[in-house]
Length: 88
Image (tube, rainbow, N blue to C red; front, side):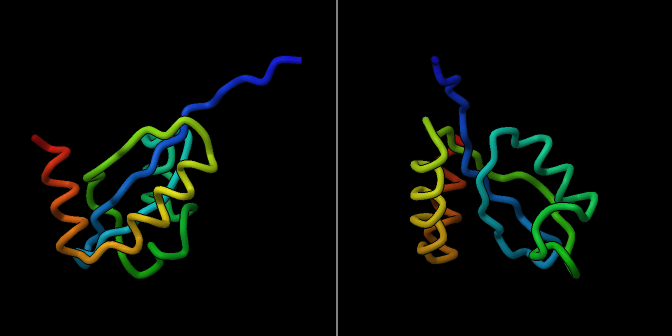
């Protein structure tokens, strides 16, 4: 039986309090809308997702999770540099 490969993404969303939320998904647009609708992460209770500022493709869930962890270890300045570099 062949296994269907699903593309995973790491993403960063800027919230209404100017904080940065990092997560993983297979569908960035759908996940952003879930966050906006209040059915996503608890992180967005009390704050609103304002804009998707970064996304990075990963070959599988395991690598997406590892990359998410790496990004979460970065300082705010380092995350902003990652976002700025991707925007170029």
